[in-house]
Amino acid sequence: MSANTIRQAVLRSLVGVLLLAPPLLLLILLCRDGVNVPYWDQWDDDIAGLFEKYKTGRLLFADFWAQHNESRLFLPRILFLFLGNLTRWNVGYEIAATFLAACLITIAVWRLEQPAIQKNPKIRWAIFFISSLMIFSPAQSQSWLWGLELIVYVPAACILFGLLVLQSQARQSTKWILCAVLATISTWTFSNGMLAWIVFFPALLFFGSGKNRRKNNLAALCWLAGFTGNAALYFHNYQFQPTGGFWQKLWTDPFPIAQYFFAFLGQLLVGQDAPHSLGTAALIGLCLVILFGAICLHIFRRGKNPALFVGALPWLTLGGYSILSDCLATAGRAALIGPDQALSPRYGIFSACLIVSLLHLIPMTAFHGLALKENSKPAKSRACVTLPAFCGCVILLYALALPSAIFDMQLICLERLEARSCLDFIDVIPEQPAMTACLFPNYQKLKRTADSLDQLGVLDFPLLKTNRISFFSSSLAPGSPACGSIESCRQTGGAEFEFTGWAVSVSRKTPADCVLFTCESAGTDPVIFSLMDRRVLRPDLAAKFKDQTYFVAGWRKTFSGAGLPTGLLQIKAWAYDTRHRKITPLAGVIQIDNN
Image 1 (cartoon, rainbow, N blue to C red):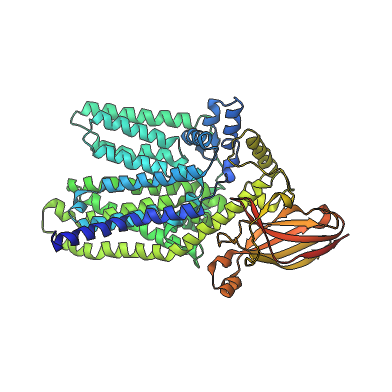
Image 2: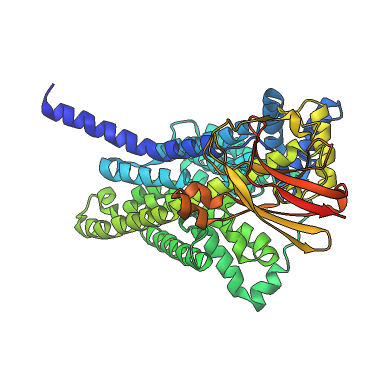
């Protein structure tokens, strides 16, 4: 084997490893930070309630049809019920399904890349790598770690695979039918899914039309009938959500509306904790929209260049879907919630779609001379500046936002672990602030649903039936280093007490999943009576131990002595491991006189 052959093989291997790096990084983070606990909307009657009704034989078609906020989650509910019954509602499988949807989106992007880029393999690899960075970006942290968010990826996947169908050699009628099926799937998955009918139509007119005008007109009428039928069913008995006076505010105070619109598209490239992150995201989004508009204008001005239009149409469709989705989100959220909601890491896939669209449109327009078979030196000159500049900016912004995104995933993981701890103890201790902050805002509904799912055997972990500390095994062996302590206790007024401290897991070297509190008096066994309220950032501990693990190891707890026995009490704190249901004592014992 020659040295040149070996060099090419090594180069191909390195390129393959580089292209696989973004999904592998995300997969590692998901394995580290994924937590099996239903969260927030998943406790609603139209999701958790499906399992109750299915187990008791009361499930109806209307339960799948029911409206959830602005969406009708007809198809996702079927999938969630199927997976839940198969896995005892282990939401880790929903998280895995979301990752799989992102993989399908990436495969479709690779397949859609056009000959103008294929003739430049280095450019194609670079564009695909950056596209993969955007699709698998940890900045979409909330989407990756919340199984319900599978719904935001399905419409994008449907649109991309529909575009693949349109570029195939299938019969014209087959293209129309398959795209209609994909648009229907998109419609009944998420609120913006109906946009697939709109963005598909121009592409269908171009790719899916034959020479027979009569057949083309009939196909277009059938498409319109399909769209109208889906819309009529979708909006039957539909309850429109409040918009907070969007149209009035658009007239009287348009700046926050515009800020939301542009920040929604730029938030993927901005760290959540970066200074002026909203303004930075809005500026990035504005630049992306201007660039997309300029490319659209350039393409339509060169209407006599069919090769350029054929190559650009799929990416114009994808970019149009992103911007139209932004319009819907702005109309529904900007005035009601405020521009800060545009930074939610739940909606990063829409920003990713626009960036991926631009990554492919820029070289196509820059190298349009290749399609025209004319002198392309000016185009190449522009490409030498525009494409590397855009790619360089995207990679730089991604790199700057990456540490914040990874840290955000860790914080979400810790919140979910605390939520899982709250769920474990929901039957044996009184209502805790963390239960409504981390699990579901309505405690009574949460407890009723959790008890019902536990009794029906839906959950793959039984809820605890005792709060006696003797029930739990300790994971701290003699001679092990301390895993935390109670640092302070103060009486805030009357019978109110506030405790602060820190706790880490000895076995995993991570912040403790949760902190439990026990009280005991002379002649009584210690019982768990409360859980920590919230975590506290502790840069002082990180500096002291020279380990960033301790940065989020702090905790705070406020409780009332009114519900505790009277007399002299000993209060202790314990680190709790939800995975193994083990406890570890924290240093320090506080004595209070509860009279």
